[in-house]
Image 1 (cartoon, helix red, strand yellow):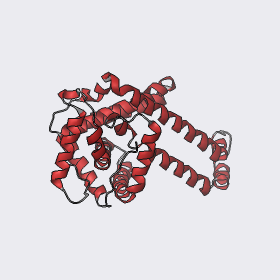
Image 2 (cartoon, helix red, strand yellow):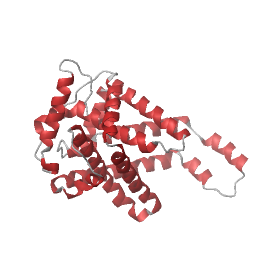
Image 3 (cartoon, rainbow, N blue to C red):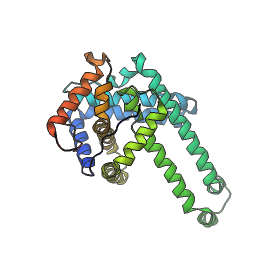
Image 4 (spheres, helix red, strand yellow):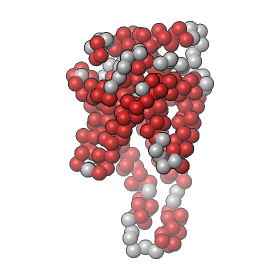
Length: 280
């Protein structure tokens, strides 16, 4: 069964981001700590390579926990930092998120192999310690290829788009085929290119500002980006989730009920036009 996707105009991208900001403002410190916790898990793999695989496999669970917290805030429920860990105890959800982690690791490995082939000369130059800096820069300029860079950027873009909505599709939509989930995520970007480009420009502009401010504002910007991306997911995939939602007794109510309430709120906002806004 194919995964249906709703299509929105470019202006929806800005509304999704605004809706994410609205949700974030309700309990900002909780979302900031959740993002910080996810970031720490990402650094664990860099600091201790032996923990790289467990950290990568845990990331989809933590992202699902953050999305679940955002959804409960939309329903007016209070959230706590510990909510990000609730997903680990949900037996029916673990296998799907575990598969997402495995596929992400496999795709990241392929990207690493592609980079090692495309930038073999650059990597070899960077590993030479006895080379004169000026000579190294000249050789680096000669070996650098814009074609290789463009190909790698395309591959990275496909990777990011394929997994952008994978976690919520598996966690909330209960889709079991990761290949179908990746295809649906890619198609969502294809059909909603204008809206997601506006969203990406806003997020990219804010991240650029963060770079000039020692990345400290990332504690605010990144949680908003995650929440607004989840709201974009709700807008594009909500109708089918409403039909296929299954009971989950997390926080005393079903995921189907949560999704139904969020969709009802969206429909009240605009019954005739696709504006993509999901009020918190």
